[in-house]
Image 1: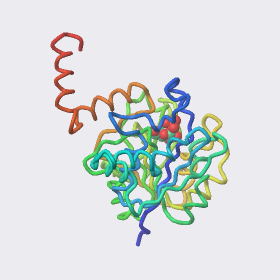
Image 2: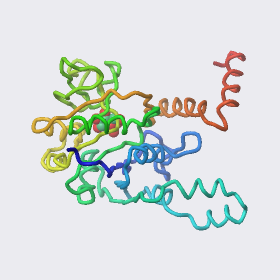
Image 3: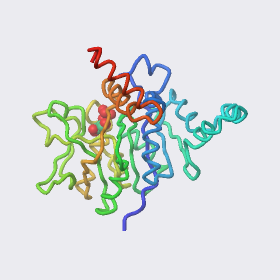
Length: 294
Ligand code: G1P
């Protein structure tokens, strides 16, 4: 029987240099897509998959994230006295009852693997999820929920993957799959940011992982890898020598909001789907088309 996964790590300590100057004083995870910060999309995905303990691995410049998930008495009082009950309910339910937020500091930017390792004491010896807020996944069934199905079926760690163009493999952890691959299967090997001619496939890992506690043991032992950083991918590469690790090509669209282009694409895509703005935004885009601006 697999252990239920109720804890998720959100590594949010990165400096966000790709989005400067927007991220000089604001965490990149607080950049909004339409009207919600990126981190909230990831948190909502986790909660809808049954996660009840949100562990944020943060750094000194990320206070806005803690504030976002905390109570804001002044705002709530103001909304309440103005009779704005819908808005009040919305801000009060960003973190629903029964869900806890825990903050752990990553004292130095030593890589994703190091960030995950910083949460070790809080997680303990149970399986856990990792969600990277940069990867916004728009899916009918939340990506993490799709992964949990595989986790329970196989009683094994799971990474989410998508097909990527060959020339882009050097931006991803890339897996080797077996012959029986049918959109899911056992990971045979995994390598962090390989050169296109050295990549074992064109399946790149996106920022969703379900990992067993043994991952921490490997993270503690591995030396710095690609870019001189402690890489989560390297720990998974060791893990799969001892335990089964599955990969799932999830159903849905992943927006790479760590890049400016991906961020703009996410804004357009989610703007078009927005219940209040979608129709008018579509009209605006059509207008651009007919004016030959698009
Ligand atoms: C990280 C991981 C990489 C993964 C990617 C997904 O890289 O190290 O294995 O494929 O996230 O977004 P980063 O984008 O932080 O360089």
